[in-house]
Image (tube, rainbow, N blue to C red):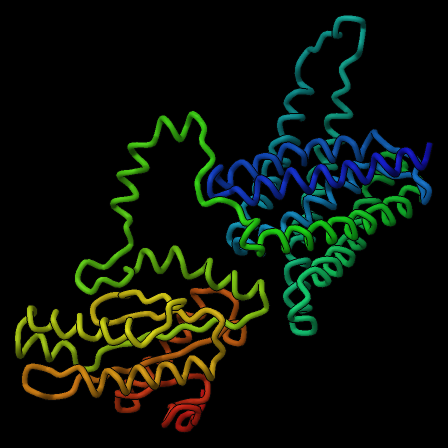
Length: 430
């Protein structure tokens, strides 16, 4: 019987992971709400099972609710962080916690009712509902700490194991679920007088679940990064897509993402694409750089020669930037005379060399109507050294652009200061 239960236990974990990763994988087509709603629905189920449903496995007494569903949910939250960002992750955490508080509050009001027995004489168990509510609140409070802890630990392990995502995934899960088992067992012992065997059995079961989830995560990573097996970009067709086709088409036209004047991407497209490109690079253990490029004294061009001539100069600058960048790079007009060049799979030294080459190219080929050279100042930042969040990286590059301008313009600044020639850095230190 224990072996049979173990086989079912492993099947439940595989089914859970397969269903939830499918929802997460197709979040662009289905909407992220499908994944989050499924996570919330199963949150109630796992708490109920942890209170009343236990099985015997070879290593002890275990609740699938705690070992399969809760452990799976924590690993899904880490996976959501890897695919999206911390701002998205906090939504289900706060939603579950606040929803559980409402559940407890409503349970208090329900106790005020004059209830009647159900058909067959089954009594109303308001006390159990109340216990469930507090157990859910305690479990979600632990989940809040677990979610923060697993993300921080995963990032910290990245310094030691930068290229091994699966091992970091497994170690983070094992550490935080050990902490969680201690806290959750304390509540079970107080509310339901759970024996010590429940603690040890649940702990081993959670570690087993983490090992299985990590193995499946590794398979998922391999499938996702295999070009022949990647998902189709075509959306999943359903009645809602059919009903909103015209609105989607109009929105697509409005969001073409191309700057009308220069022909490069616009700022909206940058803000949509850059965080995704950055996550993809970091997930693969590769560097990600960006450069902010600003045309020096451009207001003077507009004031002296008019905006039409200024537009022509700006188009020439954009053309030289586009010609000097690589097919994999992403060039956007950030606003006015500023451009942002995204450089996937590029380290800091490589980004500085490319920025210096672009600076020289523009300075030697773009000429104002009065014959003077057009120069640019450039600030460069690189992930993960300068941060793992796109907005923070953009902020570092902007600071370095300011330093480049303050240092006399027509130069490049990175962490090490002004780049005098390709591959050589000097000047002000960061």
